[in-house]
Image 1 (tube, rainbow, N blue to C red):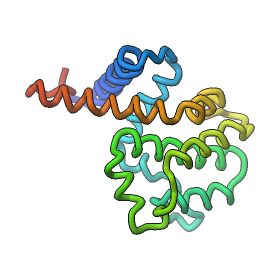
Image 2: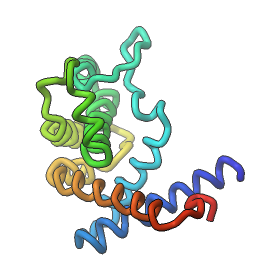
Image 3: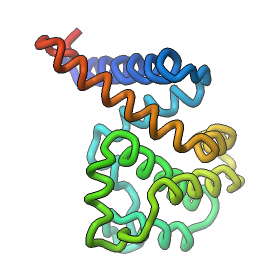
Image 4: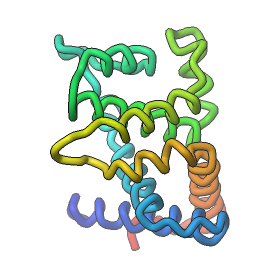
Length: 176
């Protein structure tokens, strides 16, 4: 299967799970928000998308505390991108893999950070930064901030659904 076909299958897989979790299980009828979350899952399949923020010297930032410092040194769309990434990063880890998020905070600079609080704050800041070309609409970023906990719960439902499917079906899900 070609890479673009695999990407489309993956995109449909996450879109279906996310729509089911949010629309059916949670009763959240907000297609732009649900689309954003399914695209977040597709993006974060790639390791380089998990850690795209770098210092001016090219060092990859893996701690939220370092990303926060870097965001303050940037302006305009670059600042918005870092804050948006902090929101996405904390939402992904607390929603999909909370056990990993807990481990990431232990023993590092993020030990005293509340990832959910930082994610809400980062999305809010990103929604208020005026930029010429939007990566994500400000209203979506604002809703992600306001509904962060609901999105965390919804993403945990998405994970439950794909794990349940894996337990029930031995056939390869992504080859369809």
